[in-house]
Length: 146
Image (cartoon, rainbow, N blue to C red):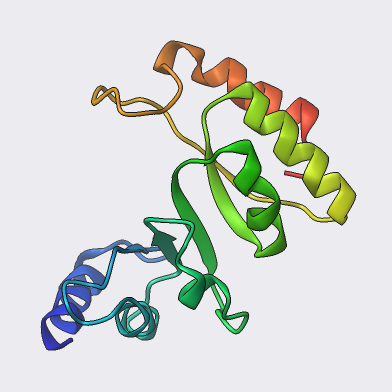
């Protein structure tokens, strides 16, 4: 954890005032444990945590986080209600997921934050950059609750 804390010291000394830091918590934090890495990141000034898989119940199940949790990767429609229940920010890049998430958020009476994933060239997932603005407009029009 000493090196992680040192990395945050370096980031914090150089980042502009007001800039928020998102810490990605993957797998078991390179042997340190995901929960330990998440706590250290928050103690050192991270404002958001990003999780690599939706099965990180050890992190998501803990309701005492004072930060937003971003779930990386596209979500299947079957996962979206779980995401709404656990107040996760979802990466979305397809209209059908936007529609489904909006329906679930309306039913739960929640506003659900989203992250528009744009394909930046690796072609793993994400909306094509030429279609991103139209999808973002659709987010706003359809999902006043997102």
